[in-house]
Image 1 (spheres, rainbow, N blue to C red):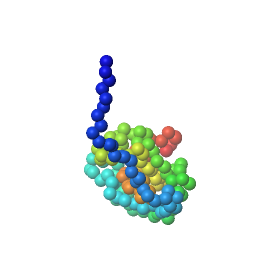
Image 2: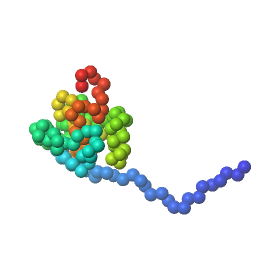
Image 3: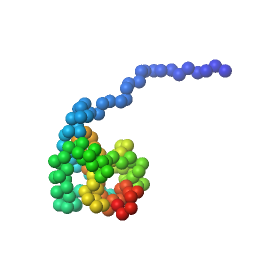
Image 4: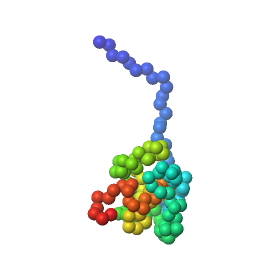
Length: 145
């Protein structure tokens, strides 16, 4: 039986591109910036948007702005870190699909107690997605958290 040979009509173009041209060390030494363009403010959103809680979180946001990315996400890694999308509760994963957000992980910032701020980190820019005052986006494996 003769094997068929695949025909190539054109050479494929490389699909991977560099997202950030900055030196990673420069990003770690830079201060966090906020973007609100992805904030989920739909009435049917299971999590509230930041403006509803801005007065409560203003001091914490201001404190984070004085820290570098390295201080926030490396020195305080137990509180602020990336969480793979697969570890989020199913409702959060469904909401990301509804919003057409395709990422491997979301980043969370701890605002004390159960309060968390969720978003996407690109360089030193934290794109705010959800405000999670009840710690419901990703259930903790630790007791009483």
